[in-house]
Each structure stands twice: as structure tokens, then as C-alpha cells.
Length: 279
Length: 237
Image 1 (cartoon, chains in turn purple, orange):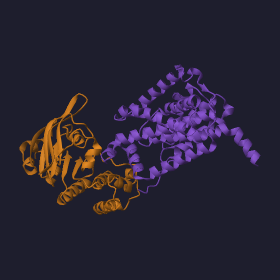
Image 2 (cartoon, helix red, strand yellow):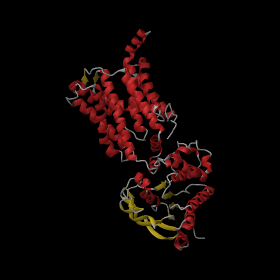
Image 3 (tube, helix red, strand yellow):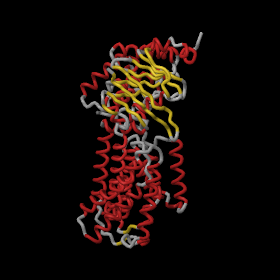
Image 4 (spheres, each protein chain N blue to C red):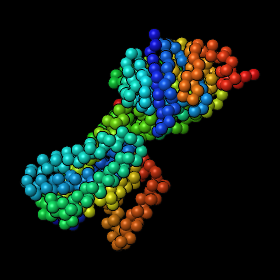
């Protein structure tokens, strides 16, 4: 029995790790959407975390815990940098600025010697473990549920319902939005670092616009009524391409089709229920 | 004694000034109405007072503290609570949660509970349907919820933006009855209304706004009997 499980785990390790890492990415997307903002920079934040962590491990041989910490702090600084000016504005400015960030990061990583150019970085030691990924995912989920149940969670819901009305309730809108963006960047950076240390190779095209849209679709499919929605979306969209492998290149078409149908017919996502409040 | 003292307030969008240097005073415990035609700058003025729109010039003193240029949440913290135009309740949240949002800045649970009881006594219809989504309420009920939500913040100055807009006549009467009751209880209210007649009836003092400027001001009874006002806003018989 244990040999079966071992074999199963060995064969599907990449997929199992991807489920957890995508779950973290979905939560990072949720954090921004939960305050009514749209960021398309989650892939960029993930990329920053991945490169920072890989470089620290490869060149400086930092302990893994410190590497993960740095992979959260550096994207957070980028979030502060672009969130500060853009979040004061309403509308699509954050989305635009984060798309630009994604392109800058991709082009930088593609050309800089430090990041290995188009070849990327390889030979990253495998330090990510099953327990680490799913422990962190569980920790993040528990925290998000606690926040969602509190008055801060109610304020976040009010913000995505109606920003003007939320503003006159006394919510510090710029601080909440910036805080959400920073937390989301940290989570994406963490996911990037875990991914880099699970796959041993990272390249600049792993963190492009495609990836940003994929992360967004986790949350759109699952729904943002509760933090469980995006994680469910991530699980489905991670498993789906595996189940559709027989379709080869058409699997992306089917994938896209499912997202379109989900958005059209389930605008609140698969898990539309809201979380109960205690505060 | 004025709680609110506005001097030379100028507000606008893009290149146009919608409100051009107005002066306005609201005395403690008074109901003051700001009347005028569509596009006169009434709502803009309220948005400026609550910090939703940044003042281009002028000063807004609330209880002696300068509010012009402050963000909305700081003005709310000072006790200026706006009921936004068009009954902006949180449609996908329950009535209960809408009310609790109103007391967002209050930490003391007993105090929140006390205010909630007060609001539900005033609006029994809300109390019967606490777990219902606010978006499912009728227009008049949503306006009551919006006012109830504002009362949860225990406002020192309540800014009401067109509370009667788009409501059935019966509800309009009810809304003005509520305003009258709030006045009796000593609330200070700045009321923006297109329904000039009803607004003047509940007000102590009134300002008439025209093209972003104060055209007339005075005790509400005086404004109500001004021939120009009668002709323009009250419909001469």
C-alpha cells in the first residue's frame, strides 16, 4: 500500500505541487479582488519571488527560510512602489500598471545576465516539500477565513460592493487597497519561490501575461465570495489540462471555453456562498 | 454656534468648477437645506464636504478643525456622515451587515448593540428582515437603511443627499417625517434636496444654489416666501 502511494506520489509529484502552489497564487489574486481591485501583476510578483529566491540559493546559499522570506519582501516592495501612486486613482490604473510591471520584469529577466537571460536559471536545488507547500496553503487559508469573518472582512466586502459608500463609512480606502496589494505580492512571491525550488528551472516566459491571466481565472472560476472559491478554481484549472491532455493543443481552447462559460453563467463563480461573520 | 463653517469652497471636475466659492454655515442642532435645480452643484457640494471630492480652494471648518483636503475616512472619523445620493446600500450584503458597516469605526460591541436597537426601533421594517439582502428592499426601504446605517455612526453632522429622489409619495412623506424626528432629537443635518417645498418645511435655514453659487440664503420660512424662489422652485400657483 505504501509503495503504491509512494509510486503515485512520485508520478504525480509535479501535479500535486502545482495544485498547492496554484492554490497560493489563487489566494494572492483573491486578496486584491476582495477589495474590489484588479491586478494583472500576480505573475510578475511570482516571477520576482522566483528569481530572487533562486539567485539567493544559487549564489549566496542562504538558508531556505531566509530565501522564502526575501521572496516575499522583494515583491512587496514592488507592490508598494506601483500601488502607492496608482491606488489613489479609481478604475483600471492598477491593472494597467501591473501589466506594465509584468512586461518590465519579463524583458529584464530575458536580457539581464544576472537572471540568465532567455535561458533562465537552472540547477535550482529541490528544497520545496509537500508539507511545506500545503502547510503554508493551509496557514494562508485559515488566516483568510479569520479575516473574512472579522470587521475587516466586512469592510473589504463593502469596498468591492460600493467604494463610495464604503469610503463614507470611514474605511481608509487607500491603506486597505495598498495593504491588500502588498499581501498579495508576498503570497505570489512565496508561491514563485516554492515553485522555483520544486522545478529546478525557471525562465522569463513562465511569468508573462498568460500566467497572469491564468491566475486571474482561478479566482474568476472559483468565485471570491470566500477564500475557498479561488483555491477550488485553482484546483480545477490545474487538473483540467491534465485531464484534457488527449486534446493536445486544443486543451487551451477548452480551458478558455470553460472560463468563458463560467464567467457568463456563474458570475459569482462556482462557490458563490459568502462567509459568516462574527465581528 | 456653527458646527460647520464653509468659506469660499470651490469644487469641480476636470476643467470646470461646479461649485464656485460658496460660504455656508450649519448651526448645532439645526436642519439646513441646500436647494437648487439639477446641476446647480448641490451634490458636488456634499461630495466636497464629505471628502469624496477634493476641494480646489476654500476652507471647511468642522467643529473648528480644517476638513478641506482631508480624505473621506478622516472626515467620517470626525463625525461627518454622508448618506450618498441614490441610496447606495451594499446590495449584496444583508440588512444586518449594512447596519454594522455603519458602525465600522466603533470598537465597543455594547455601544454598537445599543445603536442598533435605536435604529431598529426607528425602522421596525428593517428589523423584521435583518438577514435579507439589502438589494431586495424597495427604494424607500433602501433609503431608510441608508439613513439607519448613517445613524449607526452616531453622526455629529448628517449629510443627506436627495433622500426623497425617485421615491413614491408615501415614502417621501415618511422620509421627511424621519428628518423631522431626527431634528427633534437634536441632530444637526445638512439636507440637499430638489424637493424644495418639503425641504424648506423641515429646515431652519436654507441656501439656494444656482450654477455653483449661493444665490439666496436665510431662514427657511423667509426663503419659502421669497417670490423668486416660489417662481423658480416651488411652482407659482
